[in-house]
Length: 322
Ligand code: WQD
Image (cartoon, rainbow, N blue to C red; front, side):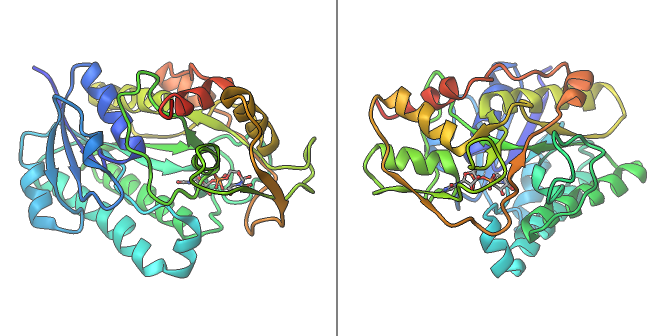
């Protein structure tokens, strides 16, 4: 019988791609989302939906009681800057919300959870590429919430209550190439969505935060990993949790670094015109370079990203506009 997965945050950007991948691999899907940043247009045919908040324990318990075999948890606030100004919102939504999910799982005998974690748990890199043994030292409250949840899952696993996979994403980008996911994030804060707003005329220009970094072209280097590749790691992780008792935390990235200038150049090539941008001062807390060593994902899950070329990635986003 098909396994049924509750996807908390399944109407969001990454969650909708996870939803799609689960359905394509024959899982049953129940999306649980409060639609605060997710969008109903991201609910795919074949998925069930409950509109609910992870802070609403009653509704959450009702959803969890629907013969759920595993949970993918991606319902969280994710604006780094905001997390430093209003930590209380992040404490409640991210940490309390995750605890509610874990408790509801235990109450309902649900044993497996794949959790959306972040490279933000590592903080300023002491070396790159970053492997999973890199010291954990988040420099913003958002990153701390992700690690706090990882630690709680580790305790619950140690106490025999569940097993978990913590997937530490690097920079998630792109859209499903078949254009099946169309909901764009409102008020995007990340580089590529902002670039797309400039490309489509919604925004006047892009400010590049710093061109005096110690990198070949002076702009910051990141590891941009396609969201469809990320989604595949979630299903692979869920299968692993269901067949083995183990728990694990692993990086999801390509291992390849791309600078802001390179993202701009790739975009100009894809859209066939110049982008309006200028160089602005550095943004606080930005490391010069952040790339992943993702060998563990390959060893444990056989996961390898299909998208390794930034132009191909940008094309999957631009395709939604044309
Ligand atoms: C990428 C690069 C910016 C906007 C963040 C979180 C991380 C993770 C993913 C999420 C950087 C530059 C950006 C702009 C720019 N978490 N940039 N002008 O900061 O690498 O990672 O998102 O959920 O925890 O920190 O991603 O997309 O903001 O920036 O020059 O207007 O683009 O300086 O070098 P970041 P980003």
